[in-house]
Image 1 (cartoon, rainbow, N blue to C red):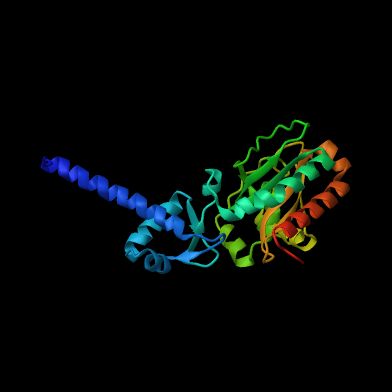
Image 2: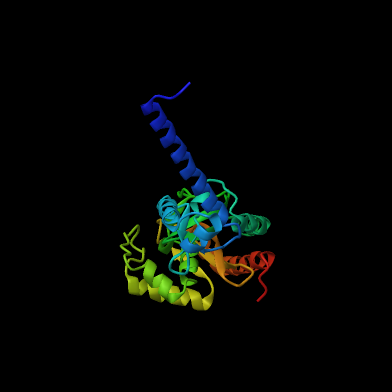
Length: 265
C-alpha cells in the first residue's frame, strides 16, 4: 500500500519532528559529567551534527531551561529544571546523599525548618527541605523558587559569584519590595554581599516574609566552589532568641556537608 501525497508529507514531517526530539535528547546526554560545560562546536563534533542544527537545539533547550549558559561565554551546562523534573543530575544526587543526614541533625538541634538551596539566575531553588513542628506561613516545598536577595541562602550563593558574573546577572535587576526590609537598592545589595563573603554566613531579617528570619552558610564541592547553601528558617521571635547558637550550628553543618562532598579546607 502506498501513501497518498498529503499522508506521505505528514509522515515525513512526523519523522523529522521525532528526529529533532532524538537529537535534543542526544544533546542533553552529551553533558555526561556533573558540572560539565560544552560549546556549540564541541557538541557538533561529538554528536556528528551540523553546527547550525546544534545551535537551534541548544537555543531551544536553553529557552526551556533544560540547559543554561555556562560560566564562560559560548558554553552551556545542564539546567536546574532537570532536577525539578526529577532527573538525575549527578551533582545534585551527590548533594542529596551528603546533606540529608546532616540537615536531619540540624533540624533536631534547632527545632526549625532546614533547607538546602542552589542558585538559578537570580533565584534560589530549594532542593532539600525538612519541615519543623513549628508551622510557618511560607510555602517552600522541594523545587520551590524565591528571589535570591530575599533569602539567606540566596545571599550566600550570590556572594560566591565572580564579580563580573554577579554584575552581569544584576544588570537588569528590577526588584520589588516584598516587605519594608527587602533590599531593593543595588549598591546596598552589593555591600551586603561583600559582608556575607567576608564573614562566611548570611542572615535574612524579614526581607522576604514578615516575621520570618533565616541564617545560611555555604556548601562547597570538592574543588572549593560554593555549589549550594544550607539554612535554618524560623519565626523572628524564636530565631532572634537563639541566633548566635543557630548560626554556629548552620556554619558547622555546611562544613560537614562540604567534607562529605570531598572538600578539605
